[in-house]
Length: 396
Image (cartoon, rainbow, N blue to C red; front, side, top):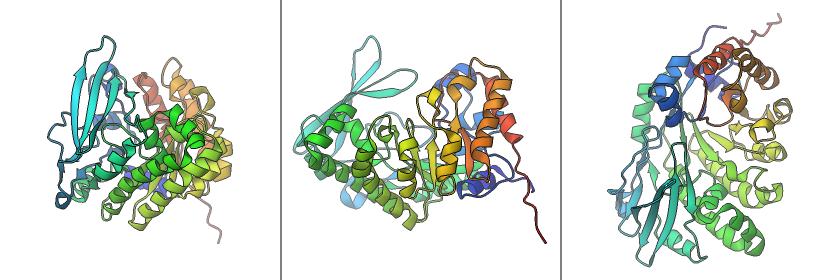
C-alpha cells in the first residue's frame, strides 16, 4: 500500500477502513504542557515536531443579525485554537467580574436579561477551569434561558477557509455548541455544568420533567447550530462529555436522559453531511452498545482502568469495533511520564494489537495530558508509525 497523507490516513480509519499504518494523534494539546515542556511552541508545531497526524480544532460562530444577535464586545479572550467568539444580544448580555482569591483565578459571570440576571462563578489554575458556583440555582431560572439565550450558528466560510489552508496535514475537527462561558457538547453534559452533577442526578428522581425541560432547552440551541453546518468542511464534530460516563450516571439514566436527545442530534448532523465522534471520558463498558446505537461515526476516549476508566480495549473492539471508529485507549498517565521508552512502545503495541486489527482505529491518549516527557511522546509517535497494516492477499 502506498503511503497516505495524514488526512487520508485518519479519514480512512474514521470511516471504518484500513489505512497504510496506524493513525496516531492526541486530543487537546494543553498550553501548560507546551509552555512547560516544549518551550512554548505552537499547537501545530507540536504535531510537526513529533510527526503526529494532526487535528485542526476550529469552532467559529456567526450571529443571526436578523434576530438582533452580535459578537460579544466584552469578551476578553478568544481561544486561539477553536476561534469561538460568543454571541450575545440586548436581551442576553454577559458581564465578567474578577473576584479576589488567594488560590485560584476566580471570575463571576452575569447573564443579564430583561426579566432578571443569572450568575455563575468559574475558577481556574494553570491546568484547567471549573465551575465553583453553578448558574441555575432556582428551577425557574431555566425560563430565562429558554426565552433569552442566543442560538449561535456556524461560520461556514471561516471553517472552509481554515480547512483549505490546513490541506492534507490531518482532519478538521469541531464540537457541537455548548453553553456560553462553560459547558459541554452533549445535552445532559451541558446541563450538568449549569446545575451541578449531584443535584442534577437527584432531580432525575425528584423532578424528572424539569430535567427533561432543561435538556430540551439546551438541545434547541444545538439544533440551531447543527442546521447551520451544511457545507462546512468539517471532518468530524465532537458530541458528548464525561458527565454521561458510567462512572457518573447509571445506564438507566443514560437511556432516559442522554441517548434520546444526543441520538437526535447525531441524526441531524448526518442529514447536513457531518460526522460525529461521541466523547466519553470515564467508564464506558456498560454503555458501549448504547452509545453505538446512537450511530455516531466514532467513539472516544476508551480510558483504561489505571487512568480511572474501565475499558478493556480488546473486548470493546470485539463488541462495537465493526460499527464505529474507535479513538483513544492509550494510557498517557503511566506511559508519557516516569517510564522507559520501551514501556511506552509496548503500550502502543498493546493498543494496536487489541483495537487496531481490521482498521477503524486511531491511536490517541485517552483525553488530554498536562505533564509528559517529550522523549516518551517521540517513542509513542515513532512506534505507532511502525504499526503497518499488511496488504490483503488478493485471491485470483
